[in-house]
Image (cartoon, rainbow, N blue to C red; front, side, top):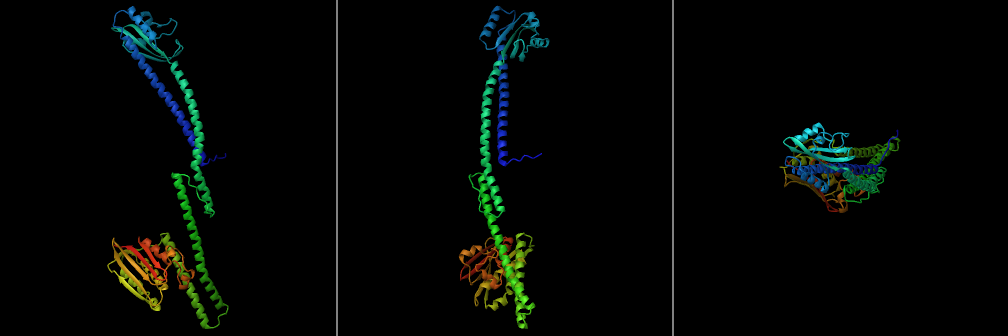
Length: 466
């Protein structure tokens, strides 16, 4: 058997329609029930009060003609029918009808009347051929039943009222049902249209098309969902572009050293290089390009581990000034090669909770950049100071080529280069600043980059202290 599939707007429409119809039916049923119940109870109370009022006219003794006339007079002006019976035979037989009829007052009811109880009768009475509500009130004289007052009101008039109200309610209910069907359809359509658009746009996004946007027509939850969806689409688009750019950069970075390695090794293997000096030169170039590939793969692996938070972070208390000094010592040959002077001012009281290898990697990456882009015979400044609020600041400043202002916000993006040939020329991978930012983030710190083209770069690292 084929399963029936309904769209969301059809489900909403059907739900709204069923809810309205059930609500109308429930309202009609409850209104009918409570109205009739309250009305019938009110009739019963009124009849009893009327009977007790009339019964209070009898003070004992024989029933006088004047009392009978009063009962007759009241019957004429009352809305209810009032029967007065005081014949002893009738009181014990088929009052107030012929003997062939079933007795109106049974043995049990007679005992109740003698005990002063008022009897209520509701329902169909074949002697009257109608639905009635009636009460039987006794007239007693010292436990003797001298007469009864039978007061009843035909309930046919009540049913007629409900019949008329029922027609009116039925018409109103039909109109409400039709309105629910029409308006429910429109409401369901209005609610689900943005969702249908999101489905369509999501499908386009899955095919790589991010040009489609969800039209926001309201400021409610659906509208805000549409805004969030568009923002997500933009974020996915940017991430997709970055992914493509990243893959392109990785391919480009690997293609150059691979082509060098392949070309130089082929030159050696096919005998193009004949003397030992050229062979040594080519082997040196192959070694250099292999080292570049090794650094690139290492940096990519580090970033992947940091992004996935799978990299182990062995945090422990560190004397930051000592760590920085030990890291800087490794750069003495490179500083000497470019005749660069190093100015240090380190606060030895600074203690942080950090991973020693990763903090050293920060210093290493920043120093490599500072040395790489500084002119010869210049100065690099490294300072460590305590700042208010349980923190410290590491500053590495150079007077090198600097960064144009318009590119400053992109520093730290993977493989981003102001000059595409710049990093490759100096042997970098284009991932150093991305790694620095990630390590700082993992240490709950912050980084600030200040630079001016032609005047150098100042990088400040803020880390929490113990």
